Image (cartoon, rainbow, N blue to C red):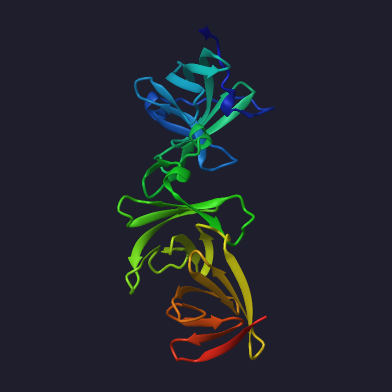
Length: 314
């Protein structure tokens, strides 16, 4: 095993032209806690160091740089000791850093004129995934309150809005399925299970129309304001049709065979209709509309007043 002074470059931000001569008087109690630097490229990936009261230390989000001990010198400089692991060897290091500034929950460290590193005191673990964890595919689950790999614990759904996208969404359920957490490249949200009047379960947020998750046939569906966003099979069996009314209005309908649903777009408003058995032709409906068709002709009925519109496929 080799032992040498180790320059703490993994977290270093180059800092040229300014001196790190400014020092503050701090105590062991002041610095005890978890200190993290949120990486600019991904606000969910962090790395840093945990400083414990009895002089012990631990790394946050760094598998190859392992902090073990820490302390303060008489002139209030921070000493970090540990092991650097890589390239088939383990190197012990002891690094002394200037405390450039300290204000309770923020800390700036420096090394001469070479660099400065800014940290914030971490209050909890929620939502923060260390770099090594992220590299292994972990993300934080607000619902389960732990790190998970969504591709192992979740049900995968594919985009129907952007079928060329290589990204997917995932549905992760809690133990009794009373909640699920929906993950996609943009966000993640926790949804509660509710029952429709017909007894079928859906997951959404009360008095909110951002996302709705349901199962139709063998397919998981994610929709928003009537527009289907994700489905288990994506657009694998999608059939699109454009109908025209007697008044010349176009109504677009996308039929998803495996899910047994049809998405209707009329005047910029989306409606998701569910397939039901008919003696001949096809039928799809929801509490507002009923779409019946055979061949190139169809009838759209508004259930509230029984009015109907004749449609002909273009």
